[in-house]
Image (tube, rainbow, N blue to C red; front, side, top):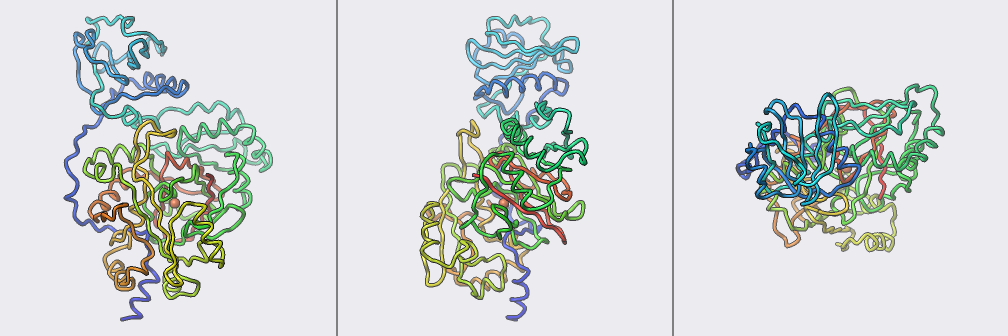
Length: 499
Ligand SMILES: [Fe+2]
């Protein structure tokens, strides 16, 4: 029996899920309705977005549903809220005007006539709404954030990437349009040093584009090694690569370049933003495809933070349960040669995690990073506190879902099925040996049914693309979540992070 447990534990992965749909009753009715943006006004929306993006207008109003509104009501405009959007036209199927109300003296009005789309700024008084001609008028109502509805279609708007000039192509490889792909028009004509020099010259544009799109894939460039990968990431972002000491499950390959997780390939890694268990998560996480998995498997899965946030907000009990709370992430690391580290490759020793055998150095890294820690004999226990939901801040003008409680939680889905979960519970029967634990700061546990609802929500928002050898994927860690789809191998993806 003991050998059976050991053999099973070798295959056990702590970031794995299985299709194990347990209690779903926590999910309440979703209060929000989905937004029905008129289908025929994409040009208007694109123009408006271009304006919002270029002017960096703070839009605070909001919308969750579209409601029909009479011309009489709009002309009296009894209660305009910043962020109110009005779609107007001769009929619902023929919208030619889009108005965004910013404040008393400023409206953004976009009109499409004769294939010409024009944007003007005016006051409410200057709108000159002709009641006779407005048969279909909508006001976006409710008190949620306009960004939520905007996230529904930002991905369909072409990026302002004229700086790519004649040397590069840009396109999408999936219908969700994430990531944004940049490729050389002629692969044989660009060297690594040429591309590095070009990226350094266009750093600001590339970073703006990355923030706008959330994910950029560099495909077809002569990026042939871990060192090349590090060189290009530094050239694009313009900062040094992070030292990953003290953060967990990676091995160093080159300066600032690490293996991705050691979790067995057959298990899925749920979507997450990197290092949200810390007070200051990295700004960027980047990946390099050294060995591409077979098509249709092993993808680095993606999702947009805003879309995940929107879904979590719709599930009001989940959102309210986490809102305003800090999460306590606990990790426990055995010493080198320990039984648990030998039978479970994802249970890393503190020497591996901190790349040193010097306890003083370990302690000083913990202090520097602001981690609480204690020694339990030869074991090191690290406690990190971080908010479950962040914002508004410099990244988003609204609260956003930004935690990884679901990665630290122990349950049968993360363990790859109930049998593995049972075996894990048997092996880790002493709580002081568990690799991970998670709870709220005040010690309140996070119920399994809540975590399962998080998994399901993340699954709904998952976006995939297939890797090709030497691809480089750049992610804005605030705007984009990542994870891993399972595969049978081979697959080798490297990673680098930038604060
Ligand atoms: Fe990650």
